[in-house]
Amino acid sequence: QVQLMESGGGLVQAGGSLRLSCRVSGGIFRDNAMSWFRQAPGAERDVIARIGRTGHAQYDDSVKGRFTISRDNARNTLYLQMNNLKVEDTAVYYCNMDPFYWGQGTQVTVSS
Image 1 (tube, rainbow, N blue to C red):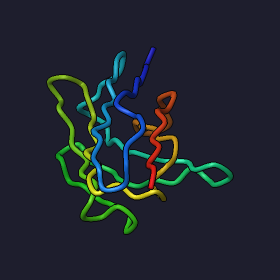
Image 2 (tube, rainbow, N blue to C red; image 1 turned 90 degrees about the vertical axis):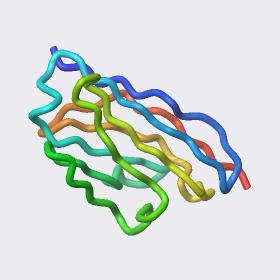
Image 3 (cartoon, one colour; image 1 turned 30 degrees about the horizontal axis):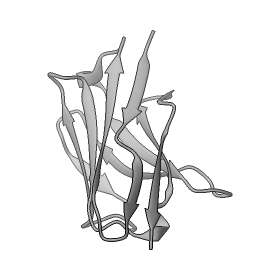
Image 4 (cartoon, helix red, strand yellow; image 1 turned 120 degrees about the horizontal axis):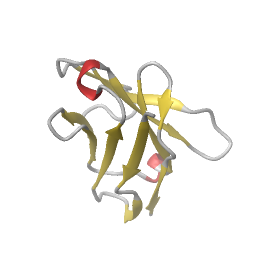
């Protein structure tokens, strides 16, 4: 059974940093593209970063230059380094493994 477990969320002031982790068990992590999504209250769940099997990364414009997605295939773990956080980054962050595996989400709250 495939399981994804996020960690690293929390409360941070604007301009601060957080690093999210997503550990995958029960699946072939290295063979799958991985993504980070986020969902703010009342909004849809949107993809913000994606990394392919070989490490090629893509970002939504809203986070480009501030967030970095990475993966450690030896540890079956996906990361999201978030720098220069803004109030509008407040959301529940989810990791996703192709095609349809999801974590439970981790709350990120950025205060002004």
